[in-house]
Amino acid sequence: MSASPTKLETLALHGGTPVRETLLPYGRQKLDEADILAVVEVLRSDWLTTGPKVGEFEERLAAKVGAKHAVSFSSGTAALHAAAFAAGLGPGDEAITTPLTFCATANCVLYQGAAPVFADVCADTLNLDPEQVSGKISSRTRALIAVDYAGHPAELEKLRALAAERGLVLIEDACHALGAEYRGKRVGGLADLTVFSFHPVKHLTTGEGGMVTTSDAKMAETLRRFRNHGISSEARQRQESGQWFYEMVLLGFNYRLTDFACALGISQLARLDANLLRRREIAARYARAFREVPAVMAPVVRNGVNPAWHLYPIRLQLESLTAGRGEIFRALRAEKLGVNVHYIPVHKHPYYRDRFGYKGGEYPVAEDAYERLISLPMFHGMTDRDVEDVIRAVSKVCEAYEK
Ligand SMILES: Cc1ncc(COP(=O)(O)O)c(C=O)c1O
Image (cartoon, rainbow, N blue to C red; front, side, top):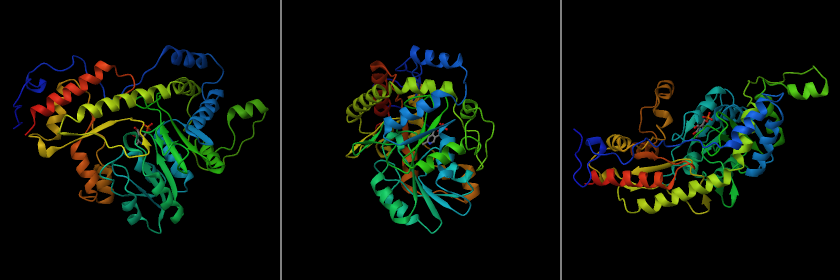
């Protein structure tokens, strides 16, 4: 039986009028005419795949995040796979990562024949807890993979110190965190390898796409080869220098990003700062409003950090509500908020349970958070009206289910 609302407005879930008429998604791209023209220009040119726009996008992105090198990929997942390869992960190795992430973060370790080992998260940020990581390091550990959950940078200083002390490679999955700042520096130049995604819900989009940044020239070369079948030169270089000869020097893949996708990336990158500003404004407005809603725990921001706000995951204070997350979620959906949940902890997926024997209860902080999490709409194209609708719907639903 679902609990009935006790007060005020009737919830849309129970036949009342929804806060909005149309569904507001949790994330959405924003393209303008300049983006479209940039793509069309490349469609009319000689190079649809690796052409001049690829290098230009990589250089601009590297400069933006303060890294020496950037290598583009066909998705964030492909970029993670390449990072796992460049980190030297192979059979018999382990990489320690967070369970509270998209499965691709851990899958990239499996792609390399290595084993992901999970460590629990910090209760405030829901980012990988360095104390927990420390307890999981073994002679097989080769890499740490931190995720900047929701766009809040991970505990990079402690993780870097651990990696340096134990001779490990630090990979930062910054798929949520393009433009986030940690102690005054943008993420992208702070780990050995940093991975970004350009999926449409991200801060800038190329449709599908990803990037790895690094300040290590040798790793950058490995990444370039890995995305191009392990071949040591590119077709365009060969055509321009009139040579046909090439060598395959390692086992790679075709993970190339097209030239028109990179043209879109360059055009979108010009608006990254404005997009971040808008997301930060929305986060500040939400934080102010949810101070008045006792059932909502807003995301925590640590000192010295400026998050990029890819997501806005609230946690429900279930102890003060008469319904669980499932019903609150359905009630918000009925009010026409396209809420979502990030994430089902990776070890709870059937594939991981079956393969590694997880029973649940191994990572209590991540598992408790999962029961409470709801991601509210957060994207730079939201209007002020959209933001106020979210606040109204969350307040309405939480009040209705208040104990
Ligand atoms: C934390 C994290 N890592 C990796 C990925 C994979 O990125 P992509 O969808 O570009 O393959 C995502 C995608 O949303 C993500 O959220």
